[in-house]
Each structure stands twice: as structure tokens, then as C-alpha cells.
Amino acid sequence: MAYDQTSATAPGLAARLDAELRDAHPSEILRTAHEHFGDKLALVSSFGAESAVLLHLASRVSPGLPVLFLDTGMLFGQTLDYRKNIAAQFGLTDVRDLRPAFADLATQDPNSDLWRTSVDGCCHIRKVLPLDRALGGFDAWITGRKRFHGGDRLSLPVVEEADGKIKFNPLANWSKAELDAYVAEHDLPAHPLVAQGYASVGCWPCTQPSDDGRSGRWAGQEKTECGIHVARAPGVAPNVGGDI
Image (cartoon, rainbow, N blue to C red; front, side):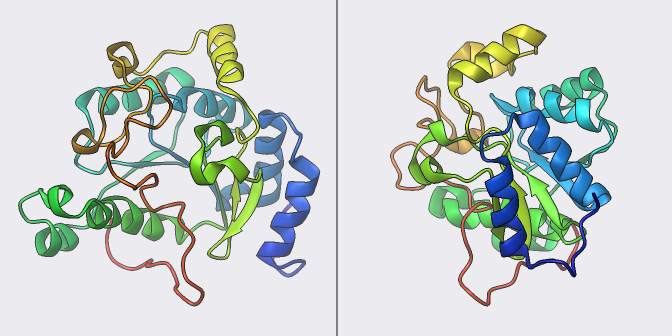
């Protein structure tokens, strides 16, 4: 069933879909998302430590689903290699590399060391703004967030509304054991850094080895999210202008 923008507000549609899908298998959630939104749906992936499961599930629903990858310019080389290998192995035909705008880097981070003084500012120009610009062409998107990551994710719904768009979180209900079982069942390749003790992989300046979920991200700071999943103040629209 195609999504009819005139039939419901985004919050109303999100609430209805969440009620219908809150106990559904991730595959069913992905199929429903694709049926509703078609080419107005994208999947956002870091190609990090746990990304293979969602990417594999999505490839079985629609290998041509647009996959948005935030190439921040600060990623580990192993992540860039993993992105290429996973896309080829799973037959993902539309992986889009999103990069920070040259103007933003030139004016706000000319020496590529903003992360030393403002991790929030660094994430904003390297992740938040590029994704905002890319999502301007979509009505809904898919994330790989899970409740067992803790923090603000403990109450994560399966479907939610954010900034006028529908967000699907197909793996919200799954435990680490269920993820591991899926990886084993389908013999999915691990991110190379997992064997080196990285349970979660982001940008190299702000990621440390850790065997406890996302605790290796921004270790020693209060920060737990890069900003792309942080609710905006009412009336603040995403920045969808400029180059990616």
C-alpha cells in the first residue's frame, strides 16, 4: 500500500504503524516501510560493528533501497573497506556516500581538529548537516538503533516521527543475542575492528575499544549521540540546502 501524504499527519501515521509493528519481525517492518514509502524511503547506516544485520535484512527486501553512508572524513580505513565489501557481497546497488560540505569544513574546521574543542560541533558539520541535506528527498528513513544500547534508546519505539519524517527502527526489540544469532545463521562478515576489541565503531578520534555496547564512543564525556537522532526544538527545521 503506497503512502498517501494526504491521509494522515506524520505523527499520526507513525503512531499507527508503531502500534501495528511494535512486536513484528524486523523483516516485516522493513517490508511495510518499503510498501508504504517506496522510493521515498532510505536506510541510514554507519557500516559499523553491528550494521551487517540490518543491511542484510534490507537487501532481501529491496537491494536497490538507497543506503546513506556518512563518510565524515574521520572514519577508520577499515570502515571504508567494510562499506565497499558489504555493499558488494549483499548486492546493495545504491549506497550513497555523504560527505561534509567543503564550505563548512573551510569555515568551521579548516585544520580538521574541531573534535578536540567541540565534539558536538564536529558531529554537526560532518554528520548532522550532510544527512539533513540528503534526507530532503525522502519522507521516511530506517535506522539501526536498538534498545539494549541503553541511554535514550531504552524507550525507543519501532516507528516514530521526527522533523516531519517517519523513522523506522526495525531492530529496536532485538537483543545482542538475537543479533549474534542472525549473524551466525547467515555467516555475515564482521567489521574488522571488532576482533580488535571495538564493540561500536565511529570516527577514529572519538572511538575507543570497548566490550560494553557504545561505551567506547565519546568515552569520558556526557555525549552519547552524534546528533542525528536528537530531537530538534519546535520550529527548527532541518538544513537541507548546500552541497553534500
